[in-house]
Image (tube, rainbow, N blue to C red; front, side):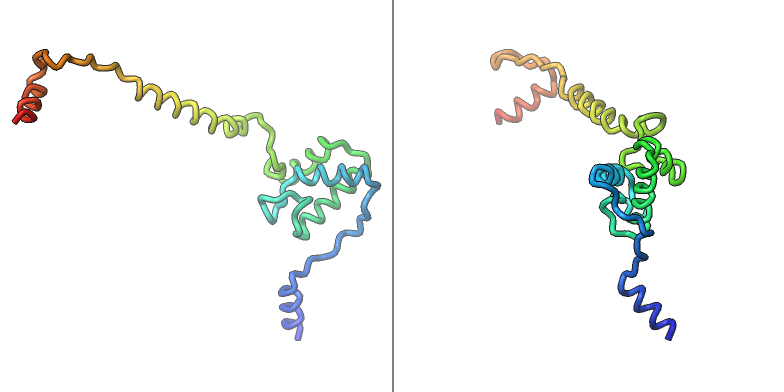
Amino acid sequence: MIALVLSLVLAQGYAPLRQGQDPLDSVREQRVQAVGKKLRCAVCQGVSIADSPASMARAQLDKVRELVAEGKNDQEIFDYFVERYGEWALMEPKKSGITLGLWLAPVLVLVLGVLLIISSTKKPAAPVAAATEEPADDYLAKVRADLEK
């Protein structure tokens, strides 16, 4: 019987209710949502905690709400989540250190590709020989002789 109840609960997509945090006043709640959109959901991976339906994301959003209610600024809230989950918790990681290389690598590859294309297409133009001139190359002479046949 316990297994049946447990399977029904899991099949229903049961998620625990919020931790009891009531929304703050409209200005602070907008700030909670704005900060939440800049923090990555650990379950959904490509979605912010403000947009994720996962229970963990809701708990994290409640934590953001709690930190905003305590008077923490945005950077302090980001630092709190980075300290616990690493740089990965940010939807847009800081552009410094090794992540700076990751941000610049696509631009560098694009520039190198364009330079390679330009350098390979800039070949010196061969002088156009007049039709009446004798070919300077033996191979070219053979090709012209074959064409005349």
